[in-house]
Image 1: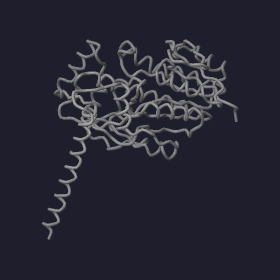
Image 2: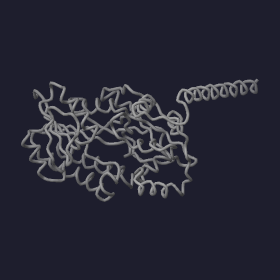
Image 3: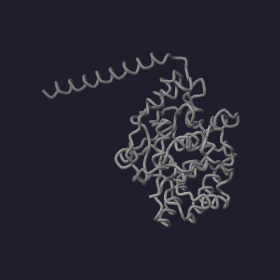
Image 4: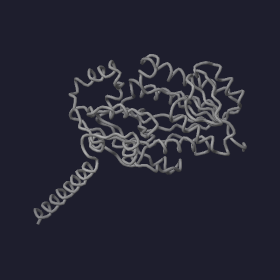
Length: 354
């Protein structure tokens, strides 16, 4: 058993990757942390050695071999085309980058663990989806666009790598949407407007991961947690309408045929970058089962979906036109009303049977 691990993190300039690196630096069982990115990180890192490199460059293989890296944490994926310089470049960075990285890992003699930060977007989103996706459920429609398609292909390449290198433990972590005070997520843009754009006639179910839970799970995956594929999300579900009420923001329902045009206008004005797969998500949402995370991985998220969203609102100081306490009171009254009506229907049915 090695005295400590030598970890390489791709995409180290990202906020989440920086938080993971800081957490690893504080551990005695981590000998070395190497961060790879084309951009220099702005985080306060003490022990992490930064290497400016593109993971598509074969020289990364030399970095892995020369440093005797035994663990790779792959976080260098981009979810929005604008951040990458267009959809074509985004696909190249995501998919070709992962292929080249795995090719480098194929030849790494000391490697025994590969951790992939993936996404629940690989399940797609459709009107006939199951209430909860478990890790073994195949999506009815394989994602055909954007980040979800990239993530699906990357997972496929990772599994093929694991079949070739049976001595390497592969962990795939499928995260729901991140929220927090530091990590930039897809919902930051949605709640940056004075009103929340929605799709007319739809109210998607949502799950969130608090950034603190995300960091802890990634650290555990790197440092010895059981390998496998795991869904990651906070307990509970929120509807988009509930999120808007908690944020004190009115909604702006957009008719379905106009959604793409409105999203295109936002992109051109650089107000927000809603990709095609995200627009579908705003119709149907997506929820996953996290039983395997608790049972096999051994971790129960400390933050529920609702707690993660409320903490996000506090830390980002998002306020709206409606008082938050008033919103909570309305929700309690609505819940009491639904319970009362359900009880009344039950009693009426019992009387009819008599």
